Length: 198
Image (tube, rainbow, N blue to C red):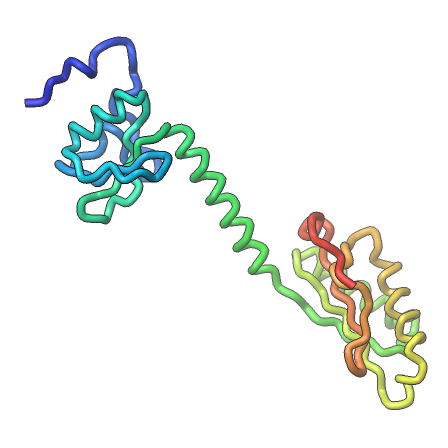
């Protein structure tokens, strides 16, 4: 029979906690044996659940189940509040990365000879994509003899960017690739931390 003497006193750390997101802690862990590690990743071996709880108690920490499906389950002796904070930070970072990966890029094509009216039409189309949180690849294609007047393409694409300057971040400055002049832009709210590449 377990000696409950070491659970007495004013320390409330080992009172059963309400489970949060299915993470079992201290007396919520019901398996008879567990594999135990600590914050320094030291392997403390397979212990009875009572011995593991006692060891955590002696260190004034919690016994937290971190791999419930292992046989036996793996538990860590750590501060539960610190553990939950670190888990939330990891989840937030993972969510942020997933959100960045899912951002769709739309392509808008223009020509060096695109007229002002048509540029306004393109601007409206780009603004619609930006309002939906999408990035936009502006693709200006040169035809045959237009390649000898590349500066006209830069004037056209710069005119378009000027119309959009208050709403976008330029992720890639206008750049010649073969017979194309391309530029990548994104909504400011998505790319506030993006690095502009040339």
